[in-house]
Length: 615
Image (cartoon, rainbow, N blue to C red; front, side, top):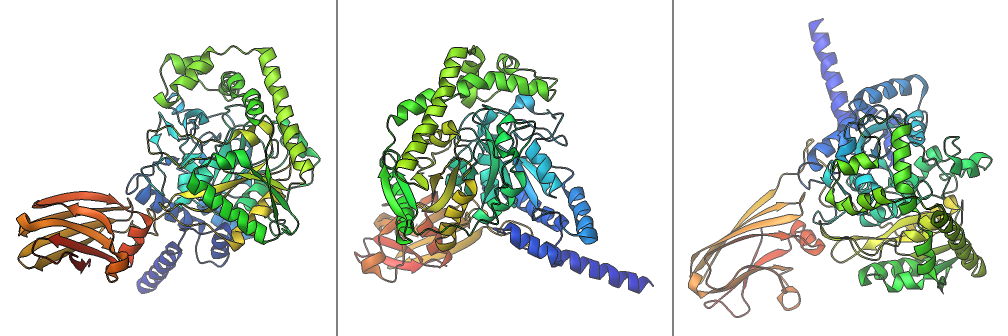
């Protein structure tokens, strides 16, 4: 009997290990569901796999700093959903899938903070409507993600957690305000995540993190229970690694909600059917308007990748039309309502969902409970007195902007308008982010899709924004899906690779001894892919007075073509040097393929130098 129990225990252990072995990095929702259906894994194992990646990469390695809190009930929820699957099958394509929520979505089972120390322990009295729909569909809320405090900015920094980093270049911002969700999904810390967009807060992080993000038509889905920045402009929606994943989640959260008057447009409307219509785009004969003013103002690398994507559409029979929107800057300047609504909306939210410790914006500002990055915005908002006449003018200007856009689209028979979601590349941490093109869709209430189209030479993602007609969201996503299927621009960040035995890959160490014509030196390197950095130490033990330089080159076998210096390691007459190199995509790839060489120049060596291949 004892032997039988030992055998059964071993078998259970093997099954558990097999389930843990399922790789979640870059896994799609359909792939995860297929693995669950086939018994290759369980939802508990998926939770553990994502938690292991959070442990490895969020506060270690690249230190993404994207996760505010882990849901302590996540494993128990996963176990319950596993049992339910065994009894009656899955509720939806999200059944048993771990997802993350931007920390401005109400949850009654863990705090909702808006990224602020002022609300560090605030547990609202009701879930957000979209959260209830996700839970009803069988999704597992794995964690809450960081954001720009109160969603009032686009670099994702706040007083509660600090700065989130971009997994494609950890020296740079991830965009915002949904930067925590974007960084987490780009790094496969969860299967998919929820963000919100008042003015670019889904679309900019999508562009900066090689993700797909849709700012839905205003009213397509409910904002009830999402901490407000501006109820007129606020929308909520997912960030995903693919259009299919985005479609699956949008089908679940879209629809009428009696708690959100804006969703009246959905009460009698047919369901959008994002997933069912994903392959419906017939590109032949379609027309895209290229917004000249926004394209001209864009960084050259951003413009190049978007132009390449538009060239692909043109090759499929889409006609690309250069367009201008008359008096665009004036219309946008007059139609913003965040300044009118934020203070009133936040105060009403805190009262509605029973915040006991902090009851209004006055408390937050008086106590200094905010990060300096939002100080100006909060102080100005606190001092704002709602002017009914000015507010009415702004609301009317929104109608005028939308009518102007719809007229331009109608006159030119456009299916979409294309432009950069943000004209500039992500800035370095601590800098202000310029180039935001968020207001066109946000102020008009129209849907806009941020779609990955490529990378710059320095490895930074680039996205295009496609603006569509009101409630044309599903067709707009299908339009993007066609591009994705043919020219998939998705590439996982190098800083968050698959785990090895449940851990991040160990740094790779090498040592190279160079001896030639009386010159002796030793080069030691440490390559850490999780921070995208090569650390080096070089010691010259003989002939230092004759040394000119020791450098790194790529593809040293073809010296006459490819021996340009990539990095200087040590200069004339020096005996020791140490430093760190942040890897370009070309150098990182060359290191992985062992195409990097040390090249040494010295008085006693040939003028062309002498090379040695790095181990």
